[in-house]
Image (cartoon, rainbow, N blue to C red; front, side):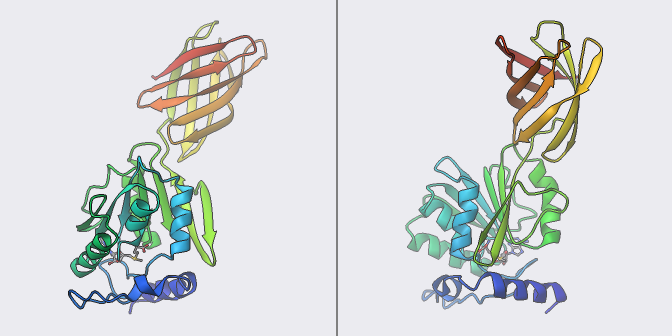
Length: 281
Ligand SMILES: C[S@@+](CC[C@H](N)C(=O)[O-])C[C@H]1O[C@@H](n2cnc3c(N)ncnc32)[C@H](O)[C@@H]1O
């Protein structure tokens, strides 16, 4: 066993002590195939996420009937089955090991969820999961990092939850724990870095300049030639809000949505709520 397989086994021994044994070692009587906790996989071993943490992961991602959940490295399908069975979502699990994928399909059928859960036998680095509204992971830090560019290119607002492992310098939006297990949650941010022109305000256009590190955004507003920092910029998926002061020193607040090269929303001033639009320069 390599050092990193050994390290994950040790970590999992601590984090999965509450995992239901029925899931981990249930014998499939049709084929005789019995997946073993810690068995080798293409890029990572199989250890199931404990049910308590799965519930917290799907809760923090606010999974509902409108969601399409992809579990990357699906194992016995427990995350996909929970997403469909308890949260009403549609779900897809991608599992490289064909025997494990068959085992998961049988679990899906036993749960009566074959119409809402699909298990793909495939490689997470080759299969297309761009349709997901929620992505779940229980991999390794370096695999998360390999997937990160693909995840960041997904539709803004896509929710991502990873059991145990982070995504480098992309800070999680939230962390959830169950017993000794922990998961990290992110919302894929829209791309706002760069220069924009905001129209719709009396007194002429406002030049907006955003700097961005994932969901962390700062910026400047230039109004009638005077520049000042934006205050309290918040970006969650494609939802953007900030405050700025006008030349007469009144503070106004913006809330709106980013859609490609357009940001549209409402500017709340002390006297009116204005519909405004910004275009990327
Ligand atoms: C740690 S287990 C997690 C299982 C499940 N997601 C869960 O949390 O309960 C990782 C799973 O990924 C599978 N796997 C490893 N490399 C893979 C790859 N490149 N593509 C698809 N599945 C892979 C393994 O066979 C294993 O079942």
